[in-house]
Length: 182
Ligand SMILES: [Zn+2]
Ligand SMILES: [Zn+2]
Image 1 (cartoon, rainbow, N blue to C red):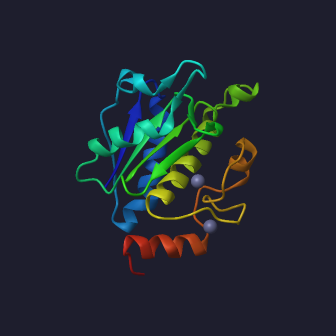
Image 2: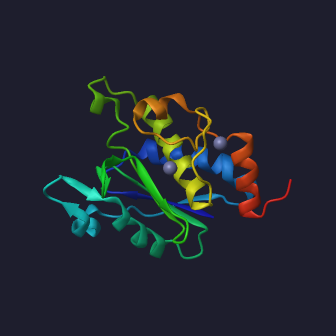
């Protein structure tokens, strides 16, 4: 089972849309999606860096992992702006050992780039980042193929260029890592 946990104020249709997509892919690999109760932002107060106005991404993962008892992976979705040491921002991150990942929609919103709001585009981007981070949880690295969801997104342009699915090589590796035969 993959547990999806909204953190703070995340649009319901984003949580539902991501869960539906991830479920349609991963349930056939034996990992159906369950949506958990939302976590209040206050839980991550200590991860806030006032100088940057951002939250330290890695602080989210142990908390999510703790919620995921019985789950193969926990995926947090947040509206908070995340960063890591040495990086201006991150779209998301994952920890295979913890079985946890988090994605932020903060910089996936078209409004962030001065464009008009677009729910469909926001969902598309969030689905890609969710599939990417789950790939990491299940042991995949970055992929050189620009259309593969495991391609590294340096900017939103990369996210928009890639598809929401794993390329054949990444998918084969994923199946192997999950112990799925086909
Ligand atoms: Zn990555
Ligand atoms: Zn690939």
